[in-house]
Image (tube, rainbow, N blue to C red; front, top):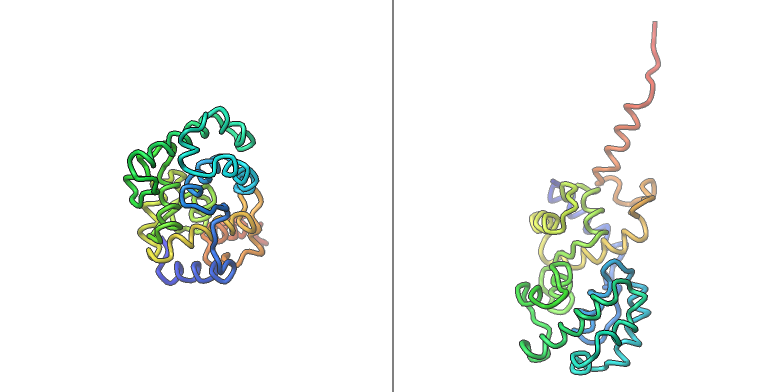
Length: 225
């Protein structure tokens, strides 16, 4: 695991790169963010942002979504993929928010993950962005990059990664850090062709250092007499 000094360097470098640390999903109401995150599963945020304006114009209130036919909701979100399941979850979640939470998005992990279609990743994002609580949103970017940096042990299990990040990240930095991981993963530390030579975090990157070590050991040594 990283030293506290290394963790702080990584955090500060990311702050310089992405000072705003904003969520990429666009929304006006708390429940709209909840549903947008559900739509983002196995879909890009950019695509979700193209879909949600028409969806929320057709169903402008939580009540209208709760009364909606999932088949019609599905037509609005078809391009997000897995639209039938997502549509059912959105309608069922709207119904449960009205029936059990007075139409408000709840503010605890237990209550959030009890909602249809809401897992720990979604719940963490809501806790961070809506309620300002410490949050560890372990999406594919966060899992990949924290493993490469050596902040985690390289596990691909979101629950394991979340547990490890809770041990190394200051709680007050956690939510913004995870948003910055998404931005950094799109710009620099991409999945297939990371820009390692131009990466501002290479000095603290375990994978970069290991790659240089392997490269050095692979070079043939010049022999002498």
